[in-house]
Image (cartoon, rainbow, N blue to C red; front, top):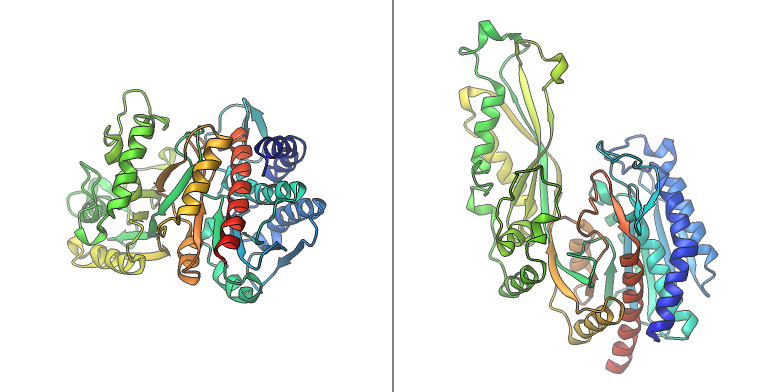
Length: 473
């Protein structure tokens, strides 16, 4: 594979074709089913799926077969097969569903309003993860046009990832004969520590979340009459959360939510901390005077990747400020989101959360924890020498620096499932979600230059995978 030819081709396709189609995709409010229960009748998911499918068909890759697969009652799945020059299979993964719009977008920006500024394409879902379909196809086409051989490629683009990928196992089972047994999995739904080199994800955290509810009254009462007699549901909630989290340090209290961190991951975290330094925390939009939990880059990375952490992502029973009277409210509820270490048992953690919150409730209050999402984390298998070398060379060729390795704090449920179903597979998990790209929040953007370089890197790895598997056989 010629590096210069690949770069020129990929840059041309991105500029002339991918960006215009991504802009159109960004205008579609195809929120994931968890955020749009009426997704099936609204039609936005089908619209986004058809847009991407039509672009893929227009690339006219020889032998390409594309199906939009529908299982009853489930989100659609885009399934692509591209014949290769060996019987080996590479599985490439992405998703096209989106997070909700969120408030707080900067002036001139918006979730469904594509805007290009300083080489960055703003809008909901471009970086997470609309670009993945375009990048995967373009990487394969770059090899085809140069006559560079590659293995058979299967591309799976789901529409339920932001809701926990609940539909995906059914599709993987239904399509297992067509998928085969991949020896390499490439996922473009992860992050990067900076935009200067190729970043390879080594682990993903699991997730246990649900709604914690506290109730003491059948209806609200005058706070002047009841306070000091009726216990506040907010105060009870604070006590319950303190069972889980040390409010002064943010550390999770029960030891059962922790795991032993592998030595190799500790070494990689140390190297990554040296590469990123203070940018590990300075990338976040802190208010003036606010400091991070820790300014030790290594400790911050461990917190984000291998230690359990709590976030409260929503609340119920609390009226808006302009509607809050002098009432002692009957109930309070919060959405609990507990990120779990990659190798933790998320089902056991969810059961432990329920027991932790519900046993011996203060004042005998009515306390319940309703689990809503339980997702396993993932720890990558050791890299085979050929892939480690390929990733290093791809980063040097297209970014100018060696590849870096880092765990991610988010969850991609598909990875844990694939690791179990395809134990012999190697994994290249990477993405464009770098500093301030702000997936799930306002002002999400895709750094276009990084997208181009990443596309070229995928082409390099595909070429090296073919060479390795043919030599091995």
